[in-house]
Image (cartoon, rainbow, N blue to C red; front, top):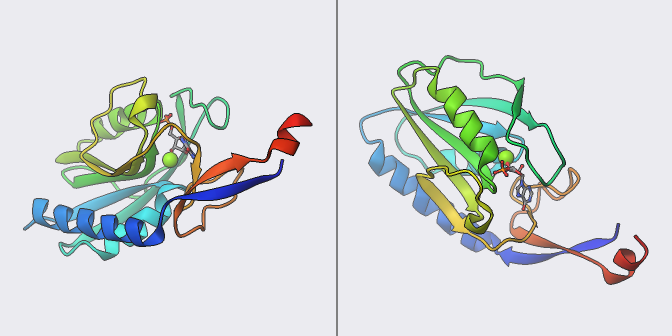
Length: 181
Ligand code: IMP
Ligand code: MG
């Protein structure tokens, strides 16, 4: 289907916000080491940019989950596709996500990670769509609250494309192709 992408948040604005969150995290975790847990693939671009702007010691780990259900609608039941390499026991864990939408995936995931005994467990997301929330999830650090639109870029995809855009864009579907659907 033909579509195009309209800029919602510019590269400059995303970069400035990540810088500010990085500074905030550095203050909040002063004297400690922060263990960043990236949820692949969407969280990877944000995690790398954020990690570069944190001044306390940082360690990183990655996990990949898939939710059973349709692409843009998450069921909340999460299957671990790739688990973390390291234990979370007694670590100051900060989960780094691309977006919190319904909140189903994260509420399930956070509960699972909490069972692994981290000293602290917090959540940082680049984007939040509060209007779409179905399950309550406590977000500690938010980049931007956005309206209920399907967005891409900075790690977020539509059909596995657009993750590499250095800005956040809204996917617009072209009228002609909608008519012929
Ligand atoms: P939740 O369980 O509904 O919060 O699902 C969140 C997941 O859905 C995110 O990690 C994304 O993978 C995906 N998602 C939600 N909204 C968007 C969007 O606007 N663009 C791209 N992916 C999205
Ligand atoms: Mg995600």
